[in-house]
Image (cartoon, rainbow, N blue to C red; front, side, top):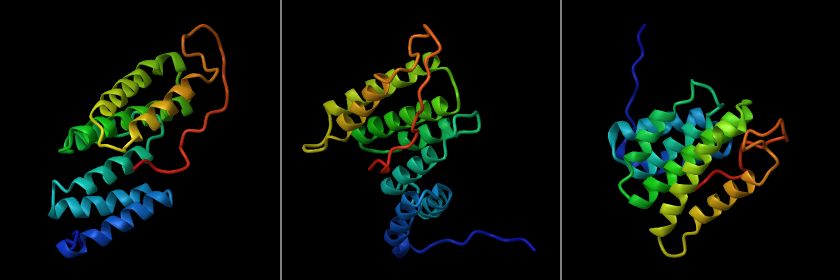
Length: 171
């Protein structure tokens, strides 16, 4: 027997998005990913679904070659708002770096990823909507992580425990 995907209704999109966000908050990013793909099948440029899908993919990063960095970047590049393109692409690089750090990659090899994320957050900050300090908050988190006693410069075998995931998913 062969199974086929079923299409959700246009009217069901708002509720489906709520479920996708709920699944992300429950640490079930694969479920959120599936729902977003269902939404994008009927509305390929749905901005909210693209954001949640990209974030759900970053939730699945484990710091290996199987992580879908390129796919995630392509999704974030589909965002129509220039601020969101910068901000979410910065999150991609930040989370990629955190996942690779947790997987045991040398901190010195990851510094360019963090620096790229910081650059993107800085660019996003310049064009952020009034009252939206998300890029600043993420910038500060990256800077605080860089202040940790990791061997960011490759000078010696420093090592400290690392918490890869923030308590709350980014907006």
